Length: 413
Image 1 (tube, rainbow, N blue to C red):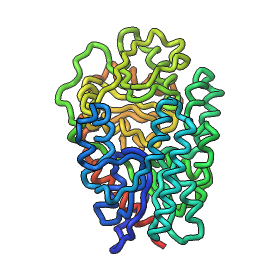
Image 2 (cartoon, one colour):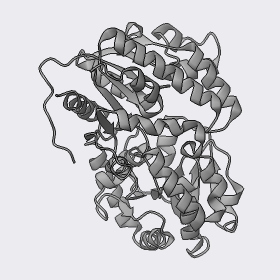
Image 3 (cartoon, rainbow, N blue to C red):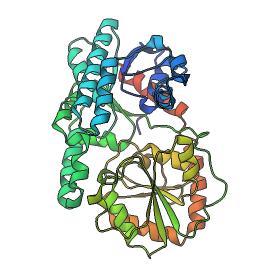
Image 4 (spheres, rainbow, N blue to C red):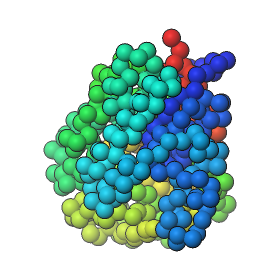
């Protein structure tokens, strides 16, 4: 882990840009708390009145409610309705590589670059929104700081290409990933222009090094709302081992390896609960129709937190993950997590003590842990209690402290 650096006495306010309620606005809030937020450039952001109104119906209330933070005033935000319109069109398009997303990203990037230049401010740009802004700022002498959301695009393309050769059934799943689309290849140039990089995990930093980045990289690991994701006090009571998976069941998240590991267990000994709003890729599950899978979709955060407490184990066997917020969310609920070294969980989970960490792309590694769990459910519950204690160390307040320390380190000459 990088050395912790004390904030500078006078830290210049920065422009920061990303779309939607990314990371629950915690990065922007980290700047705001230290009087270091010059401007947040985003798409849709609502005032308290609009964020709380129910006049326009439940759907608008849900949309606006999450695109507001009570501690970030609208006077510190510049929205783009053009970018919002494009993002909405992309949702109707229902493709990760929608051209509307690419246009919306570039619109935000251009606005952010203009504002940074106009204000003479450093820019912190999340990876999708960095390239155009960084090009605008070239030669200005203003710091250009990249927040690398996911592992580097070129690194991922190489990894996914190898994975397709290894698991042909996963081709459609992996080709849908944003990084495989030519529309987003220009994002690869951002790290070449960045003066510094902030990322949420050692794995993401590793991907940058592998892609040839020379810029200093600082890690600020994400946090969790330990009150919303409150701990359980009693173990699950189901006869079968209940395994939870949160998110789209994709090969990027190790779907085929997970299903194969489950298929190798005695029939009826385990079941998978899939918490997702995405359609299930039939190619990915072909051959594993006998695996017991229950799909639960459309749950709110509070409903998900309550439901996760019925799981013996939550799994995220990703082959590549920028962090994996569900890891901390499950741990905060007192549920142990099985993840891979290609996730943020590898930075803080002690294998066998407060969770399980295995190599990515290995059915046998996952299966071995499931076999152990079947005969050690009491120990698994105790592991979950330890996981809760570990999660409490990773609050959003701690993330903000680390993010601000990374920012001040990044702008030092």
